[in-house]
Image (cartoon, rainbow, N blue to C red):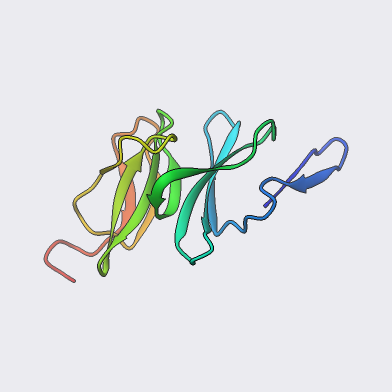
Length: 128
């Protein structure tokens, strides 16, 4: 993932050494949350500031995919449990981890601006 200054044309990697598979930009445009695999191939969630004043940091103890910022700065993501995926939420420091939705989902695609709604792909209840 690269960032570019459109006025100067200068560009550089946002998170050297990481190969993001998916990402989301915060509402204030100051940081990005991204999914990148660790050395064992497990999907981890990382945060990186666009100003590059600090290094990207991994959200501790979180394994998941399709990370999206919620309106209050929480991170929503899809986590696999057995053969199903569920939407979870966590604070950027790794605290407050909890399931956000009891319905299994195939993909997490969005969170409403007020945080009341989750947009995800799922089978109809009763269908597998």
